[in-house]
Image (cartoon, rainbow, N blue to C red; front, side):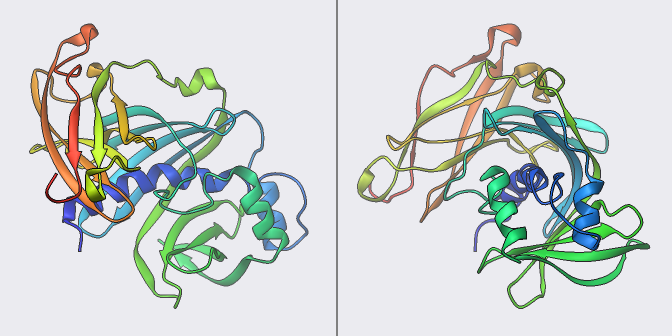
Length: 297
């Protein structure tokens, strides 16, 4: 089993990726007078950036609130995480469908979900209540692994909760409460693609060869370590660069960080330190870090 902090890392990233499910299934167009047809009409469609605010509950982690902005045309994702109202993370990264996507299809833009609706893979599976609110349960099936079950408010037909469920219908242990959903302009999203480099390096896998991996940076050993402060992917050459604005990372001064690195077969932690130099960025960021997933490198 992965370490508990690894699960928290995955949960935090999953919060951001949940935003992408909203681009298609309830976009305008098509539909009928049934539950799914009314759900289609309930979500506003307009503006290039989908904006979701949600609270994630997952095993082994306290509930956190995440605000995410995703622009499909440029594959840009901004994630702002709050703990009891205080911002503990705010970063921009490039999001692309790959083997490390928490829910395959979320980054396939509208096509994945339009096909799901057209082919009958999105269907109503029941009715019930969630936190005292009556809901219709709708499930999106992706075949194997964790599936997504959505609670639609029975009065407004908007999604108010997402739940992970196993193929046998049992709970996968996490749920996402939808607190707000709309569409905004790129200016309102305020993507920051030129933040100072926090850390760069290379990931070595089997046989000490460069490998593709997901790389997330966390503050280490303090109250703010529950959310990634930067995130990205390596290329085929194993190289990565993570960026973070010092003004958006809690603490200041000399801080301890850790990298959570996941390849298709291995997982590793790598500690590092940085000093916040304000508008001048981070000291030490110019020195590449090597993360060895394989043994004996």
